Image 1 (cartoon, rainbow, N blue to C red):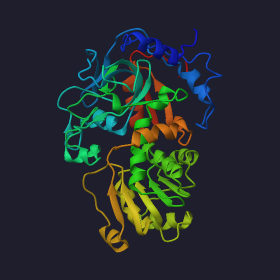
Image 2 (image 1 turned 45 degrees about the vertical axis):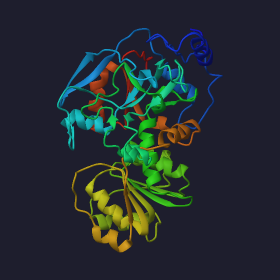
Image 3 (image 1 turned 90 degrees about the horizontal axis):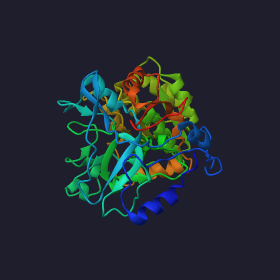
Image 4 (image 1 turned 90 degrees about the vertical axis):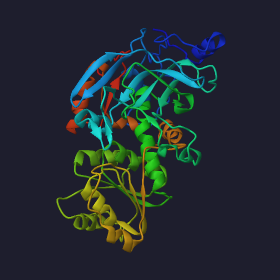
Length: 416
């Protein structure tokens, strides 16, 4: 098959129409060896491109992965969304990553006060291909490949006006009850919440922009400066990405902490200068041992909890230095026993972190594009849409770092 030139495709389509027939945004990675630069992603960018052979195949399937109740799912053909505003675009979903929140809804049917009361489409970590644009859209064209920011604020409230749209009380967030998610064929979104991917970044990596944006926001909350020492509790996807972002922000010593050695090995490959395998001991004993083994003296400049686990949160306050910063990024039990005396006596600055805000997605794309964060190393497997529930089971088992599900119109090559 001849190589489709995306630039030529976009120019030809834009000349006559702003709409590309649904499902006809064909993209192939064959014969692109000379076109893709090499980057340190843990593998050659060409190898990933050849292995995924991504394209939206002809067809209009809007098959969706629907959660009815815990452990009860179905595949439902839903109507293809129509653009409801001139600034919206329609995106054919190529790949979607499974987030811990998706697994929690699938397993329990609720997260806190967000309860699945009616059937809900899961998924919110997605990348896809623009197939239709509203008549006021100037930033994107049919054929453009994009990462989706899956939460849309009201744009008018006090928090939105202050630049904290992630805290908007009226935000519509994918796969958060009662709103449907992106494990579907097509998704309508505001154009300014779709981030164009550089040509050398495969769409599978585009599905990891969302968790990377979460990590970017967390590390920003920690106020990391060049030469800082940082400890990241938890080596799940977000924790490992926090390690990588902290290094990219200039931290000279970054310690990854977890209870699974294999996760720590991955953290090392993503930039951790030190790792610590948490022991079955008290929070204070673990903190003392960590500080000694990692040469942190009287404490780390910043400690990030990306686990949500009570023992990790407790240890964090004993690891952070006097006058240091503690950021809570992981979610766990609503209420825990917290070492308030340690926080007070050290005058620790404590911050929460929730999703992402202005500039976080843009920076996440740039960190992937320039090779600063090797997101491809987190991908455990890519499965076809028909195997979505299997992917959820594997994600819950703990033996996978990041499972990726291809869209229902996606054709995967063998071994993908």
